[in-house]
Image 1 (cartoon, helix red, strand yellow):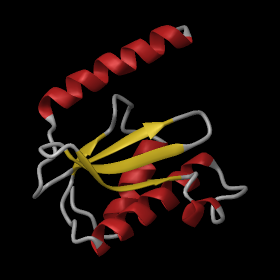
Image 2: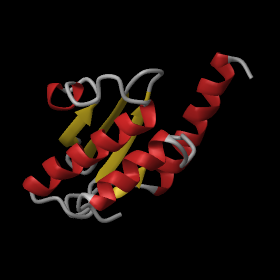
Image 3: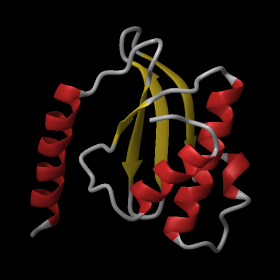
Image 4: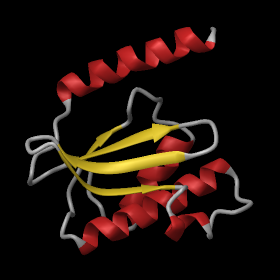
Length: 121
């Protein structure tokens, strides 16, 4: 499958997932974006359209820790750091939005690390 087709099908899957998932003030949405070398995640309140917490491998807090790690290990660090920031802001329950990606590999590692660090899905 070509890159253009795989991106288009991911977008279609993401739209399909987003029809069912919506973040509210009491239970915001944790969304994931995966690029070739990095992983980005944020917790969003869709009712007000605001990002409450965000974290990625490019964040200075995480970037120093993940140097030389494998991508799945980087995702685990990002998930744990995101959950710590969220718990500090009083966010304990979220809805998980996998962004059209399979719940596998880096996406799964991020989600499980966030669960271990205190977030409830």
